[in-house]
Length: 328
Image (cartoon, rainbow, N blue to C red; front, side):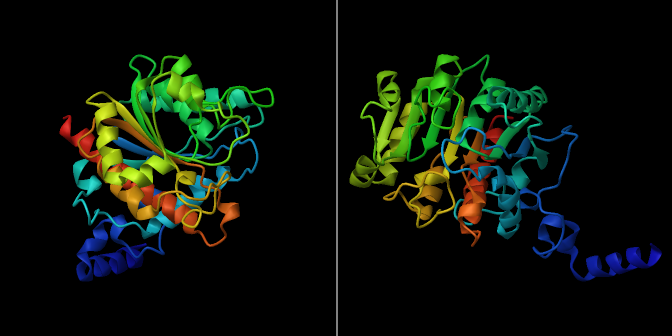
Protein backbone atom coordinates (compact mmCIF):
# COMPACT_ATOMS: atom_id res chain seq x y z
CA UNK A 1 0.00 0.00 0.00
CA UNK A 2 2.82 2.41 0.89
CA UNK A 3 4.53 1.60 -2.42
CA UNK A 4 1.30 2.21 -4.35
CA UNK A 5 0.77 5.56 -2.63
CA UNK A 6 4.32 6.65 -3.44
CA UNK A 7 3.82 5.68 -7.09
CA UNK A 8 0.57 7.70 -7.24
CA UNK A 9 2.24 10.72 -5.63
CA UNK A 10 5.03 10.49 -8.19
CA UNK A 11 2.53 10.37 -11.05
CA UNK A 12 0.59 13.34 -9.67
CA UNK A 13 3.77 15.40 -9.40
CA UNK A 14 4.52 14.73 -13.06
CA UNK A 15 0.89 15.13 -14.22
CA UNK A 16 -1.02 17.34 -11.75
CA UNK A 17 -4.08 17.29 -14.00
CA UNK A 18 -4.50 13.61 -13.09
CA UNK A 19 -5.91 14.69 -9.72
CA UNK A 20 -9.18 14.76 -11.66
CA UNK A 21 -10.26 11.22 -12.66
CA UNK A 22 -11.90 12.75 -15.74
CA UNK A 23 -8.45 13.63 -17.03
CA UNK A 24 -6.93 10.20 -16.57
CA UNK A 25 -6.14 8.28 -19.77
CA UNK A 26 -9.51 7.40 -21.21
CA UNK A 27 -8.87 3.67 -21.36
CA UNK A 28 -8.53 3.50 -17.56
CA UNK A 29 -11.05 3.32 -14.76
CA UNK A 30 -14.57 1.95 -14.38
CA UNK A 31 -16.91 3.32 -17.07
CA UNK A 32 -19.34 5.99 -15.91
CA UNK A 33 -21.22 8.53 -17.99
CA UNK A 34 -18.51 10.86 -19.31
CA UNK A 35 -16.20 9.64 -16.53
CA UNK A 36 -18.20 11.57 -13.94
CA UNK A 37 -17.86 10.33 -10.35
CA UNK A 38 -20.27 7.55 -9.36
CA UNK A 39 -22.43 8.46 -6.36
CA UNK A 40 -25.40 6.69 -4.83
CA UNK A 41 -25.62 9.33 -2.12
CA UNK A 42 -26.91 12.40 -3.96
CA UNK A 43 -26.22 14.93 -1.22
CA UNK A 44 -24.54 17.90 -2.84
CA UNK A 45 -25.28 16.68 -6.37
CA UNK A 46 -27.09 19.07 -8.72
CA UNK A 47 -27.31 16.97 -11.90
CA UNK A 48 -27.52 13.17 -11.98
CA UNK A 49 -26.56 11.14 -15.04
CA UNK A 50 -28.79 8.08 -15.02
CA UNK A 51 -29.16 4.93 -17.08
CA UNK A 52 -32.59 3.42 -17.76
CA UNK A 53 -31.83 -0.06 -19.17
CA UNK A 54 -35.36 -1.00 -20.14
CA UNK A 55 -36.89 -1.81 -23.52
CA UNK A 56 -40.08 -3.59 -22.51
CA UNK A 57 -42.11 -0.99 -24.38
CA UNK A 58 -40.58 -1.77 -27.78
CA UNK A 59 -43.07 -2.89 -30.43
CA UNK A 60 -40.59 -4.57 -32.78
CA UNK A 61 -36.77 -4.63 -32.49
CA UNK A 62 -35.52 -4.79 -28.91
CA UNK A 63 -31.99 -4.00 -27.78
CA UNK A 64 -32.22 -0.54 -26.19
CA UNK A 65 -31.90 -2.10 -22.73
CA UNK A 66 -28.19 -2.33 -23.58
CA UNK A 67 -28.01 1.38 -24.42
CA UNK A 68 -26.88 2.82 -21.07
CA UNK A 69 -23.99 0.40 -20.65
CA UNK A 70 -22.58 1.03 -24.12
CA UNK A 71 -23.20 4.77 -23.92
CA UNK A 72 -21.19 4.81 -20.71
CA UNK A 73 -18.40 2.94 -22.45
CA UNK A 74 -18.33 5.22 -25.50
CA UNK A 75 -18.69 8.35 -23.38
CA UNK A 76 -15.12 7.87 -22.16
CA UNK A 77 -14.28 9.67 -25.41
CA UNK A 78 -16.07 12.82 -24.21
CA UNK A 79 -13.86 15.49 -22.68
CA UNK A 80 -14.91 18.05 -20.09
CA UNK A 81 -15.50 21.19 -22.15
CA UNK A 82 -17.78 21.84 -25.11
CA UNK A 83 -15.45 23.49 -27.60
CA UNK A 84 -18.27 25.10 -29.58
CA UNK A 85 -20.21 26.69 -26.73
CA UNK A 86 -17.37 27.09 -24.24
CA UNK A 87 -19.47 25.38 -21.56
CA UNK A 88 -17.72 23.15 -19.05
CA UNK A 89 -20.69 21.65 -17.20
CA UNK A 90 -18.49 20.36 -14.38
CA UNK A 91 -17.40 23.91 -13.56
CA UNK A 92 -21.02 25.06 -13.47
CA UNK A 93 -22.63 22.24 -11.48
CA UNK A 94 -21.90 19.28 -9.23
CA UNK A 95 -22.51 16.28 -11.49
CA UNK A 96 -22.45 12.56 -10.77
CA UNK A 97 -23.38 9.25 -12.36
CA UNK A 98 -26.19 8.02 -10.12
CA UNK A 99 -26.32 4.53 -11.58
CA UNK A 100 -29.26 2.81 -13.24
CA UNK A 101 -33.00 2.93 -12.73
CA UNK A 102 -33.09 -0.79 -13.39
CA UNK A 103 -36.29 -2.79 -13.20
CA UNK A 104 -36.80 -5.86 -11.01
CA UNK A 105 -39.81 -7.12 -12.99
CA UNK A 106 -39.15 -6.17 -16.60
CA UNK A 107 -41.79 -8.48 -18.09
CA UNK A 108 -44.67 -6.51 -16.56
CA UNK A 109 -44.76 -3.22 -18.47
CA UNK A 110 -47.04 -1.13 -16.24
CA UNK A 111 -45.24 -2.26 -13.09
CA UNK A 112 -41.84 -1.69 -14.69
CA UNK A 113 -42.73 1.91 -15.49
CA UNK A 114 -43.85 2.36 -11.88
CA UNK A 115 -40.45 1.11 -10.69
CA UNK A 116 -38.70 3.66 -12.91
CA UNK A 117 -41.02 6.37 -11.60
CA UNK A 118 -40.10 5.50 -8.01
CA UNK A 119 -36.40 5.83 -8.79
CA UNK A 120 -36.89 9.27 -10.33
CA UNK A 121 -39.15 10.41 -7.52
CA UNK A 122 -36.15 10.02 -5.19
CA UNK A 123 -34.02 12.01 -7.62
CA UNK A 124 -36.63 14.76 -7.79
CA UNK A 125 -37.22 14.86 -4.04
CA UNK A 126 -33.48 15.31 -3.56
CA UNK A 127 -33.66 18.45 -5.72
CA UNK A 128 -31.48 16.85 -8.41
CA UNK A 129 -31.96 17.37 -12.15
CA UNK A 130 -31.82 14.16 -14.23
CA UNK A 131 -30.11 13.70 -17.58
CA UNK A 132 -30.76 10.12 -18.64
CA UNK A 133 -29.91 7.49 -21.22
CA UNK A 134 -32.47 4.86 -22.21
CA UNK A 135 -33.81 2.46 -22.87
CA UNK A 136 -36.78 2.81 -25.20
CA UNK A 137 -38.94 5.92 -25.36
CA UNK A 138 -41.59 4.55 -23.03
CA UNK A 139 -39.22 5.41 -20.14
CA UNK A 140 -39.78 9.15 -20.53
CA UNK A 141 -43.34 8.78 -19.20
CA UNK A 142 -42.31 7.63 -15.70
CA UNK A 143 -39.64 10.35 -15.63
CA UNK A 144 -42.40 12.90 -16.31
CA UNK A 145 -44.56 11.33 -13.59
CA UNK A 146 -41.77 12.03 -11.12
CA UNK A 147 -40.80 15.50 -12.34
CA UNK A 148 -44.03 17.06 -13.56
CA UNK A 149 -46.85 15.84 -11.36
CA UNK A 150 -47.29 19.28 -9.78
CA UNK A 151 -46.12 21.43 -12.68
CA UNK A 152 -46.51 20.29 -16.30
CA UNK A 153 -43.45 20.69 -18.49
CA UNK A 154 -42.94 21.76 -22.08
CA UNK A 155 -40.76 19.67 -24.32
CA UNK A 156 -38.35 19.90 -27.23
CA UNK A 157 -38.63 16.48 -28.83
CA UNK A 158 -36.23 15.25 -31.53
CA UNK A 159 -37.58 12.12 -33.22
CA UNK A 160 -38.75 10.52 -36.45
CA UNK A 161 -42.05 9.70 -34.73
CA UNK A 162 -44.46 11.79 -32.64
CA UNK A 163 -44.92 8.96 -30.09
CA UNK A 164 -48.50 10.06 -29.46
CA UNK A 165 -50.15 6.83 -30.56
CA UNK A 166 -52.64 4.82 -28.58
CA UNK A 167 -53.32 1.17 -27.80
CA UNK A 168 -51.10 -1.32 -29.64
CA UNK A 169 -51.32 -5.07 -29.14
CA UNK A 170 -53.18 -4.56 -25.90
CA UNK A 171 -51.00 -1.88 -24.30
CA UNK A 172 -51.22 1.91 -24.09
CA UNK A 173 -47.77 2.27 -22.55
CA UNK A 174 -45.43 1.22 -25.37
CA UNK A 175 -42.67 3.38 -26.85
CA UNK A 176 -44.99 4.84 -29.50
CA UNK A 177 -47.37 6.44 -27.01
CA UNK A 178 -45.58 8.08 -24.02
CA UNK A 179 -46.46 11.65 -24.91
CA UNK A 180 -50.15 10.97 -25.45
CA UNK A 181 -50.24 9.42 -21.99
CA UNK A 182 -48.21 12.34 -20.57
CA UNK A 183 -50.71 14.87 -21.92
CA UNK A 184 -53.67 12.83 -20.66
CA UNK A 185 -52.09 12.62 -17.19
CA UNK A 186 -51.50 16.38 -17.07
CA UNK A 187 -47.71 16.04 -17.10
CA UNK A 188 -46.90 17.53 -20.51
CA UNK A 189 -48.25 20.83 -21.82
CA UNK A 190 -48.98 20.12 -25.50
CA UNK A 191 -49.03 23.82 -26.38
CA UNK A 192 -45.45 24.10 -25.12
CA UNK A 193 -44.27 21.04 -27.04
CA UNK A 194 -42.44 20.89 -30.36
CA UNK A 195 -41.62 17.67 -32.23
CA UNK A 196 -38.79 17.89 -34.76
CA UNK A 197 -37.89 15.53 -37.61
CA UNK A 198 -41.17 13.63 -38.05
CA UNK A 199 -41.18 11.35 -41.08
CA UNK A 200 -41.54 7.81 -42.37
CA UNK A 201 -44.18 5.61 -43.93
CA UNK A 202 -47.52 5.02 -42.20
CA UNK A 203 -50.33 2.50 -42.11
CA UNK A 204 -52.78 5.07 -40.74
CA UNK A 205 -52.63 8.72 -41.87
CA UNK A 206 -54.12 9.80 -38.53
CA UNK A 207 -51.66 7.91 -36.33
CA UNK A 208 -50.13 11.16 -35.02
CA UNK A 209 -53.30 13.27 -35.14
CA UNK A 210 -53.30 13.56 -31.35
CA UNK A 211 -50.24 15.83 -31.56
CA UNK A 212 -51.79 18.37 -33.90
CA UNK A 213 -55.28 18.23 -32.40
CA UNK A 214 -53.88 19.05 -28.97
CA UNK A 215 -51.69 21.94 -30.07
CA UNK A 216 -48.24 20.38 -30.36
CA UNK A 217 -46.01 22.02 -32.96
CA UNK A 218 -45.06 19.21 -35.35
CA UNK A 219 -42.12 19.91 -37.66
CA UNK A 220 -41.98 17.32 -40.41
CA UNK A 221 -38.62 16.54 -41.93
CA UNK A 222 -39.82 18.20 -45.14
CA UNK A 223 -40.47 21.47 -43.30
CA UNK A 224 -37.20 21.05 -41.44
CA UNK A 225 -35.15 20.95 -44.64
CA UNK A 226 -37.22 23.67 -46.26
CA UNK A 227 -36.66 26.28 -43.53
CA UNK A 228 -33.41 24.98 -41.99
CA UNK A 229 -32.36 23.96 -38.49
CA UNK A 230 -31.84 27.51 -37.23
CA UNK A 231 -35.38 28.63 -38.07
CA UNK A 232 -36.70 25.42 -36.53
CA UNK A 233 -34.95 26.25 -33.28
CA UNK A 234 -36.27 29.82 -33.35
CA UNK A 235 -39.68 28.19 -33.46
CA UNK A 236 -38.74 25.79 -30.65
CA UNK A 237 -37.72 28.63 -28.36
CA UNK A 238 -40.94 30.47 -29.17
CA UNK A 239 -43.03 27.38 -28.39
CA UNK A 240 -41.47 26.50 -25.04
CA UNK A 241 -41.16 30.10 -23.86
CA UNK A 242 -39.72 30.63 -20.40
CA UNK A 243 -41.51 27.77 -18.63
CA UNK A 244 -39.92 24.52 -17.41
CA UNK A 245 -38.81 22.48 -20.40
CA UNK A 246 -37.54 18.95 -20.95
CA UNK A 247 -35.36 17.77 -23.87
CA UNK A 248 -36.06 14.29 -25.25
CA UNK A 249 -33.74 13.05 -28.00
CA UNK A 250 -34.60 9.82 -29.80
CA UNK A 251 -31.63 8.78 -31.92
CA UNK A 252 -33.95 7.64 -34.72
CA UNK A 253 -34.51 11.34 -35.38
CA UNK A 254 -31.07 11.18 -36.98
CA UNK A 255 -30.64 9.70 -40.40
CA UNK A 256 -29.68 6.04 -39.90
CA UNK A 257 -26.37 6.57 -41.68
CA UNK A 258 -25.37 8.36 -38.45
CA UNK A 259 -27.23 6.11 -36.00
CA UNK A 260 -28.02 2.68 -37.44
CA UNK A 261 -28.18 1.08 -34.01
CA UNK A 262 -31.79 1.83 -33.18
CA UNK A 263 -35.01 -0.14 -33.20
CA UNK A 264 -37.10 1.94 -35.61
CA UNK A 265 -34.78 3.65 -38.12
CA UNK A 266 -36.25 6.02 -40.71
CA UNK A 267 -34.18 7.27 -43.65
CA UNK A 268 -34.03 10.95 -44.52
CA UNK A 269 -33.31 12.46 -41.11
CA UNK A 270 -31.11 15.31 -39.90
CA UNK A 271 -27.40 14.78 -39.34
CA UNK A 272 -25.32 14.73 -36.16
CA UNK A 273 -23.84 18.21 -36.61
CA UNK A 274 -27.29 19.72 -37.07
CA UNK A 275 -28.46 17.88 -33.96
CA UNK A 276 -25.59 19.27 -31.90
CA UNK A 277 -26.29 22.81 -33.07
CA UNK A 278 -30.01 22.47 -32.36
CA UNK A 279 -29.39 21.34 -28.79
CA UNK A 280 -26.89 24.17 -28.25
CA UNK A 281 -29.53 26.68 -29.32
CA UNK A 282 -31.52 25.69 -26.22
CA UNK A 283 -28.98 27.46 -24.03
CA UNK A 284 -30.95 30.02 -22.06
CA UNK A 285 -34.16 27.99 -21.88
CA UNK A 286 -35.53 26.91 -18.49
CA UNK A 287 -34.40 23.29 -18.64
CA UNK A 288 -35.44 20.74 -16.01
CA UNK A 289 -34.00 17.55 -17.49
CA UNK A 290 -33.40 15.56 -20.60
CA UNK A 291 -32.82 12.15 -22.08
CA UNK A 292 -31.34 10.27 -25.02
CA UNK A 293 -33.28 7.14 -25.92
CA UNK A 294 -33.52 4.21 -28.33
CA UNK A 295 -29.80 3.47 -28.68
CA UNK A 296 -29.81 -0.27 -29.42
CA UNK A 297 -26.17 -1.46 -29.53
CA UNK A 298 -26.91 -4.94 -30.96
CA UNK A 299 -27.83 -3.30 -34.27
CA UNK A 300 -24.52 -1.44 -34.51
CA UNK A 301 -21.48 -3.53 -33.60
CA UNK A 302 -19.20 -0.60 -34.51
CA UNK A 303 -20.32 1.29 -31.40
CA UNK A 304 -20.88 4.45 -33.42
CA UNK A 305 -24.55 4.86 -32.46
CA UNK A 306 -23.66 4.67 -28.78
CA UNK A 307 -20.96 7.31 -29.35
CA UNK A 308 -23.58 9.48 -31.04
CA UNK A 309 -25.87 8.91 -28.05
CA UNK A 310 -23.10 9.85 -25.62
CA UNK A 311 -22.34 12.98 -27.62
CA UNK A 312 -25.98 14.12 -27.65
CA UNK A 313 -26.20 13.37 -23.93
CA UNK A 314 -23.17 15.61 -23.37
CA UNK A 315 -24.73 18.40 -25.45
CA UNK A 316 -27.90 18.14 -23.34
CA UNK A 317 -25.83 18.10 -20.15
CA UNK A 318 -24.09 21.32 -21.19
CA UNK A 319 -27.27 23.33 -21.75
CA UNK A 320 -28.96 21.84 -18.68
CA UNK A 321 -25.95 22.71 -16.50
CA UNK A 322 -25.96 26.24 -17.86
CA UNK A 323 -29.67 26.52 -17.05
CA UNK A 324 -29.30 25.13 -13.53
CA UNK A 325 -26.39 27.46 -12.78
CA UNK A 326 -28.33 30.49 -14.02
CA UNK A 327 -31.20 29.75 -11.61
CA UNK A 328 -29.11 29.77 -8.42
